[in-house]
Structures are given as structure tokens and as C-alpha cells.
Image 1 (tube, rainbow, N blue to C red):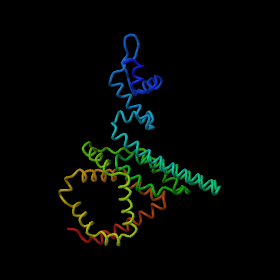
Image 2 (image 1 turned 60 degrees about the vertical axis):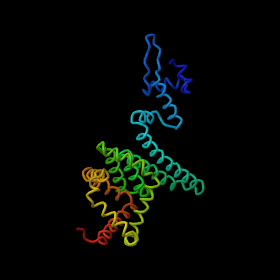
Image 3 (image 1 turned 180 degrees about the vertical axis):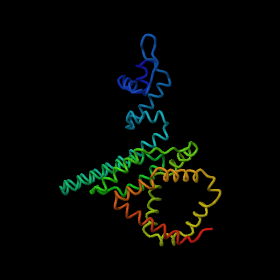
Image 4 (image 1 turned 120 degrees about the horizontal axis):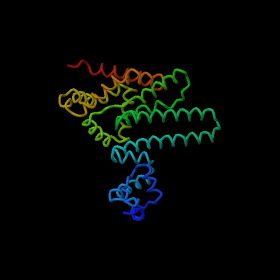
Length: 286
């Protein structure tokens, strides 16, 4: 097909098609007299590109979708967009506060904190694959709202950034397929409900244990069973726990989070106490 036919077929201008060629998104063949010849595959690819542009994707995001496939790439992009939309809502709230109160110093500090929060959450999404990255973001986001005020907090921030920038978790292919399935199953709302349930258990561990004793006993029985040890869920859990031990997540990342965020430090202490209550209530195991 000639360029004019392609434009009509795809609803794109010649300039747009030329630009996508310059960016390497399409590579049409050249005829002997120097004309570009577009195949049916080129046209199909351009239609996908046009659709993705209408959805607001950048060239780099479109390239990721075309190279990685629509499911994993689109999920990653959607998760980043979700962070961006949440940040936009928070910025709008700050703008209203600035208009109402006129407190420039306070709003500047809150805006700096929001910028730092978004930077860290984006790194978390990039460092941790699939649903695990999204879960990590949802877990830590509530503890990143306060400004960085002390030198110890600034040092902790730099430690976190260095740690995340150096991370790349290698997930075996069979476990990655399982992780992809889990990513489709665990949407944001369900993850939030799980996170809220965990927070409730941490706040009132003894009450939570009494209210959910049977369910917790059943959960422990499943987790201790040989059948569970043969599942991809168990192997993925073991793989991630091994990575946490070996990468410095437990010894570097978590201590830095505790230094950065007083709210997370308080939560972590409550979590340790809740775990003590759980172990005590559960009693000795065979």
C-alpha cells in the first residue's frame, strides 16, 4: 500500500506515520525507486499505534506495549496512571487549601512531600513486578505523606532511592506466569480491602484474633500442608522471601523506611506486637 492509502485506512496523517517511522515503531520496506511500501502487517500495527495514542500513551509507552504485549505493558502503564491520578487529586486539594488559607510555606512543604511520595512509589512499581509491586505501593503509600524535615530523614530517603534504583527481581518464567494470573485477579479495590484488614489486625490484634480464630486456624492449616507446598503460590512466596533476605530489603529498605516515616515506625512497632499476640494466641505448633 502507498502512504495515501495507509492514511485513509488508519485515520492518520502522513506526518504522523513518518514520525512513527522515525521513532522505530514501524519499519516499512523500501521499493527500488525509493518509495515506502506498507504491508498489511504495517497497517495493522499502525492501527494499534493510533488506538494507543488516542488513549494518551507516549511513544515510549507504545513501544513497550508493542514489544512486551498488551497485557503486561498495559497493566504497568495503568498502574502508573493510577498513581498520577491520585497525585493530581492531592495537588488539586493543596491548591484549594492555598486559595483558602494563603499559607505558602505549609503548602510548599506539602507539595514537596507529595513529589517525594510519587517518586518513591514510582520506583516501587518499577522495582517490584506485577501485583507484588502494586501491593507494595498500596502498603507504603499511607506512610509517605509527611515532609522530610531532619537530616536523618534525608539520609534515609537517599538510602531508599539507591536501594530501589539497584533492584531487579528475577522471577522464573513459570512463576511469572502465575504472577500474571494473580495480577489479573487482585485488582486495586481487593488489595485495599486486604490492606485495611491487615491494618485492623495490627490496631487490635487480640480482638482480631478472637473474631477470626477459626478462619486463622484454617489458614494456618493450609499454609502448613504438603499440598500447599506443591503450588506456584508457595514457590513464589518462598522466592520473594529469599529475595528479601538476600537483597537487603529486610536489613536496608525496612530500617530506612522506619527512619524516614514516623508513621511507619509506629506501624512497624504495632506490627511486631501484633505478631507476638498472634504467636502467643496460636500456641505451640507440632
